[in-house]
Image 1 (cartoon, helix red, strand yellow):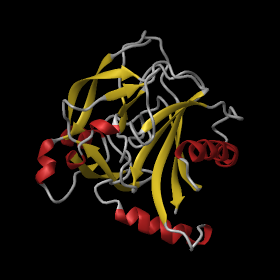
Image 2 (tube, one colour; image 1 turned 120 degrees about the vertical axis):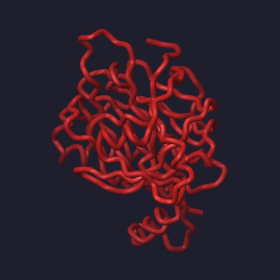
Image 3 (tube, rainbow, N blue to C red; image 1 turned 90 degrees about the vertical axis):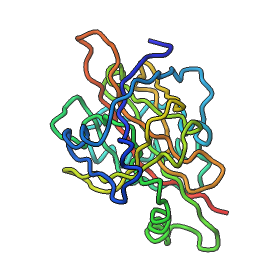
Image 4 (cartoon, helix red, strand yellow; image 1 turned 60 degrees about the vertical axis):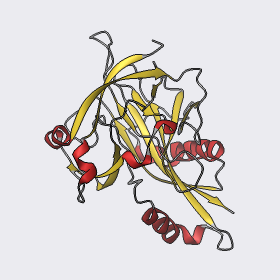
Amino acid sequence: MSGTVTAEIRFINPEWKHRKVPPVIGDRASRRAHTTKHKVPVESARGAETGLDTTGFTLTRHKPDMTDFGDESAVKTTYYEEVAGVVKRLAGADDVFVTHHLIRTEDRSDFLTAYARFAHCDYDITDPGPYSERALAERREALDASRQWTFAWYNTWQPIDRPAVRNPLALIDARSLDPGDILPYQYSGSYASGRGSMPLFSPDLRFWYVPGMTEEEMLVFKQLDTRPGRALACPHTSFDIEVPPATPGRRSIEVRMMCAFGS
């Protein structure tokens, strides 16, 4: 697979731009109530010029030293260390603190751990201040007090068990985002609750994906950056793509982490 495909992607409904209390999305009914599908072109990122501080994402090669991603202990030791090193190098960070990971499969029984079905960021990028304050409070002992610190939050995303052919990940080019068209929402579910953010639909938005991603490829994308003059965030979502009926569902692991930059 290569080239551009057409996808239906959900965006937050425009009426929420004028409301003070954000919507709560925690199941399929609330997702349908507060979002609307739009057909958009999604371009292949293979061979494209991308970067964490420009498009908000990049594709890199990474062959994990483990294959059993059901072994949570090994994931939290071996795999965390691997991907933290990759992100530290790509982002030019002074330190990296992994927060948690999530494995997604074709199992749709849990809304929050199933494939995400609407464009979103996992952090509220409309109000980044509390994230930096919490980062300083939680990591104060690990950070040199003589330096000034800024922070950015990233995800790694990698297929496991087999290539990601069905339900690939679409990423919105950060250069095409209007920060004024990004709205907060509240998520709530079995394993977590908090605030994220979602873009309004605009025909100016540009979408990318990686056709046929293999288990030795990894996407790194930005969730939130507090530093000026750089890509703010990279909203993302899974989407349906035309594949043979027998194509198995996508399985993937995503790791979330905070990067610290000292000056």
